Amino acid sequence: MPAESNLSRITRTKTVKNRRRSPNWLRGIRRRAVSTQPVVVILLAVAGGIIGIGIAVAPEWVSPSALIILLIFGGYLLRIRAISVLCSLLLVVSAVVWFLRPTIMSVGDMIMAFIVTIAVVMIVRVRERFGLQGAISDLMLVDLRDRLRAQGQVPSLGRGWKVETAVHAAHGDAFSGDFVVAIKRPRSSWMELALVDVSGKGQAAGVRALQLSGAFGGLLGSMERENFLSAANEYVLRQNWGEGFATALHLSINLNTGQYEVAGAGHPPPAHLHAGSGQFEMLRTSGVALGVLASAGYPRVAGEMHNGDALILYTDGLVEKPDSDVEMGIDRLLGVVEQVVGAGRGDGGVGSVLELLSASPTDDRAMVVLRRTL
Image (cartoon, rainbow, N blue to C red; front, side, top):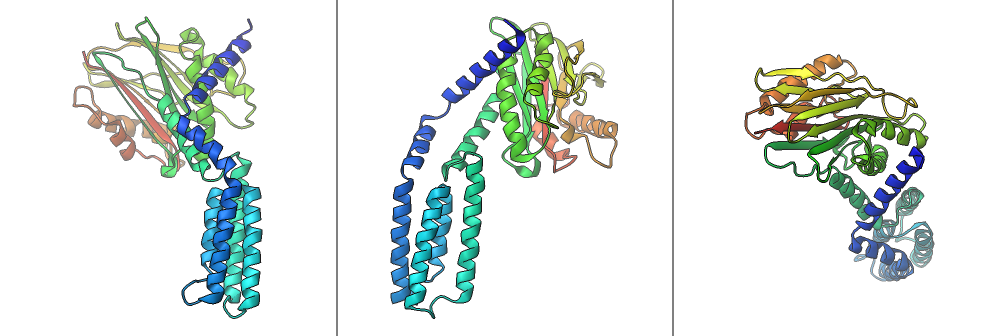
């Protein structure tokens, strides 16, 4: 069977598995959110009628701004057709109130209501353009974020090994373009891990990261180790993202012997901290970024971890600044790592390193530290 067909099958299988893991309660809410749209419109319209009566009968107790609150609720709960119907009904209520008590609603109230209506409709329209449905859109985004984090969990490595990972999104967003996928081959002593940095930032990068994490997670362990980055490159090329690309590091390590291989795709070089000498060895890789060049090669660098050694993998958000040299950023990173995570110096703290090394708060950043503790 052609290689492309194998990749498609692997990716499709991974997607089906992820879909099956979608919580039952979330699927139930999605169904109810669609089926209850007419009911929500009716309830909000009735509430609008009651508020309108209150404005006309007891204006000292009921403010015209209460109608704006209903619009905001509608924008949170409804889709574009339903919110359009609700806006029309509330407009009728406002017109009736103004006809009965023209002095109650000022020109400022009417202008404010019009601005809020336009804003709510525009927000709902943009949200629906991405296939998000009312209040359920927030739950869907939370579900996607949790899936991305779950796929980044490193499996248990057993006695003698410790791994720490941390991913921080730019501006403190919920979604990051940096992610980790890892797998321990069944009935084997080999563990594989990929650290990936998707181009872009925010939710756009997060969506791409979710797509790639599922695909790359399916590729890991499904083919020979030396073919992983080549297969990942083919997958990214087939997405036709235009200027979209990704950088990556692929680590394979034998948990019995400590022997490892690492290959890179346009990614900053990982570092091997040798406990015996206290020196860092930079593992210079030479592959091009994923999604840039067809049939690209990804040479592998080999090494061996001994007691107390550590491997440090990181993304460029920790070392790159527009006005600073990358090598200086790497030196600063290694200096902080030696202080905070240094081999044999406690449990380390990858999260602390990320906080101290925000080279650019506008960039995603991620880090993996693997230590041998035998």
